[in-house]
Image (spheres, helix red, strand yellow):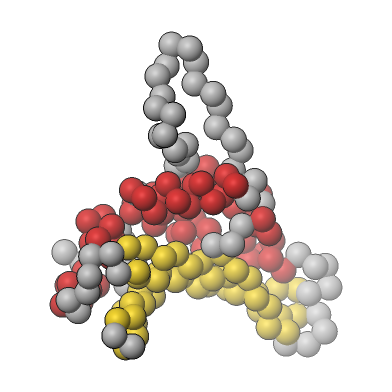
Length: 166
């Protein structure tokens, strides 16, 4: 069992309590060619980490993320099932880790899970940070026990906020 799981269980929170996960990384960039975000996407693993954690958690969180990415046009609409295939009308479309990662990389500015910020050092150099944020119900996180190495886990209960490093 992961250390963060023991800490979360020890807090005695309600099963449906919201847990906010965040992962941040950045890189040095040149500002004059206006590709700082694209450079950070290429040089960091933030999008890959986000896609992996969404896939590992699964359940309602995975469905919600996929639906939001579909609504934003980040993921292509799923193909209609063949006449031979059966699919429940209420069954939401799914996308795997690779589809989520590629969709966000190609349509970064159309999604809201990963933010970018640039700190200027001077007129031509800076540092671009990408931050992935995902809100998950506690019960889904405890059931899935994803690898959250490098992630920050934050929960708030009764006016007290607790941060745990994954």
